[in-house]
Length: 264
Ligand SMILES: [Zn+2]
Image (cartoon, rainbow, N blue to C red; front, top):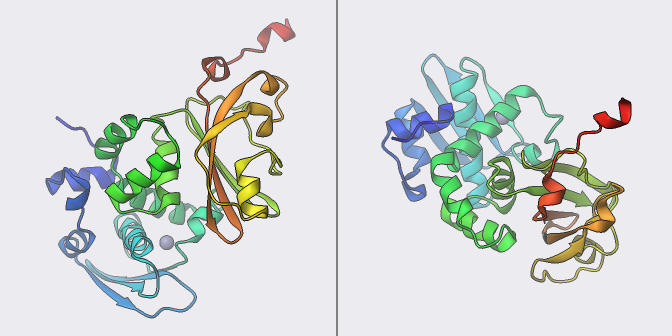
């Protein structure tokens, strides 16, 4: 028996949904009393107006199909968690302000991520990837009909592989996210190293190449870093944003180091 690990997953299991292509968001919305419409929206990606047990969600029709899908799932998150209130959401912000967004927005994002990529479906496929690189992320994104960024974040959060995901703009690090198995001492540098793949794509407009080995000090200041190698991959997601996926495959790097002996 599958045990739901979140409210969104419980919902999917109640509906008897067991494969990604059965996740029909409009049908789920209908079932919850939510009418969905697509319109030209300016200044926001999606809007939810609720009254009693019914709501209308409006999605910006100029956006691409996977973003619309995420936006609808996000609004269903508000409907499930924050009933009785109305929202106007710039859903793309969830990536940018990853740690500084209001709690309700983060809750809605988490709900969306769990509804579109439920652990009981996502984790088994993620664990079967040959390598956790952006080629693997693309496979998952196609299977779950989600964006590269949302899928990469889910892959890191689900902790199927020891990964660090970092987003840089030309001005430096915008946000990063780390799998649970990666110790906190691996904290990515603010500035992109000129030796990184991400640097070539962001500043030299070079095309993406395959994931490759890099010395860990390309990414981390940590004094042990020069001893290790990691696998890095990078993909440009907009003019001024590049995502890097760092696979910490060396077991030594994953060991928690106890510093207590220094304090005795
Ligand atoms: Zn929202």
